[in-house]
Length: 209
Image 1 (tube, helix red, strand yellow):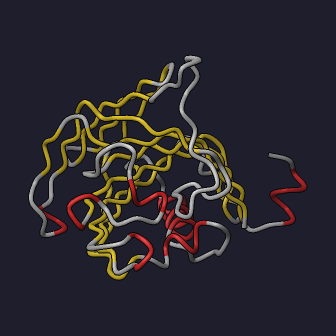
Image 2 (cartoon, rainbow, N blue to C red; image 1 turned 180 degrees about the vertical axis):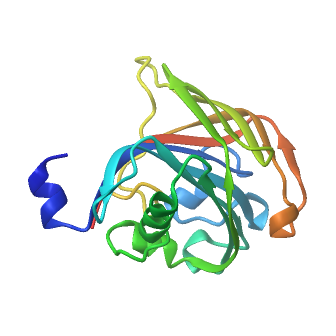
């Protein structure tokens, strides 16, 4: 990130995407098809490695969206619960929410527009690690996941690009499977999740607005 970028725009955030859901791998939502079983319970984490939002440094902070998607992902009407990294100051929390709820425009705003209802915003501790395509994710006592990228015949990660839907618009995604996906459904009025072998997605993002 350069001084010119931060001064000329409202925000620049760069980091990692970690995503798990109840669809089978590879998730049909990303190519605009209906989710497996007709609906999807997904958890998406954007972890900002470096970034500034309206002059507020949000580096090394995360935000999670826990969503119930009642049909085709592009039809919207999602119900969502938002969790913010509990290490955030009040300024950092507001800055992250402004970006990832679409309030400051940019590529993430189209995604945020698919949400019909946000049932709440809470703080929670975040733990997210990725090494050589394998990762772990834990958000308080609400979400826990372990996942691994799919690889092709050459041993390189399978890549999903130019998909009709993306949680990291403008960047390639790396689909995989989650050996563990546990999620509390209480806040969303959904059943608890405890499954293995379903969809995961990793990726890097760079959003500006």
